[in-house]
Image (cartoon, rainbow, N blue to C red):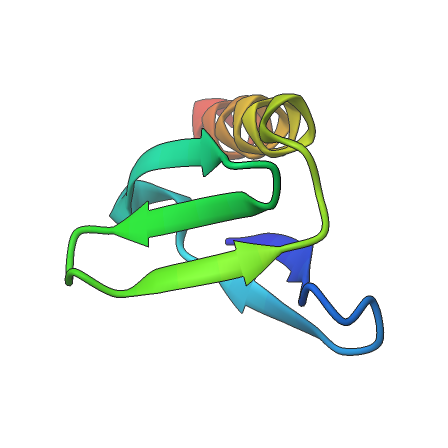
Amino acid sequence: MILVTRINKVSQFYVNEDMIEFIEETPDTILSLSTGKKIAIAETAIDIVEKIRSEKIRIRLATEF
């Protein structure tokens, strides 16, 4: 799961990165989940992609041992 910040830049929450179908910047960043829910967040699309990449690497390294 990745930590994201609500558009108000105050509260944060975790999102299951496997539930993200696509990311839009319109200009706010919108996560579209496989459930149909859309979430506006403060991070950029590139930030989210990097967080997902880091989480996938962390998971892969944890399962190798």
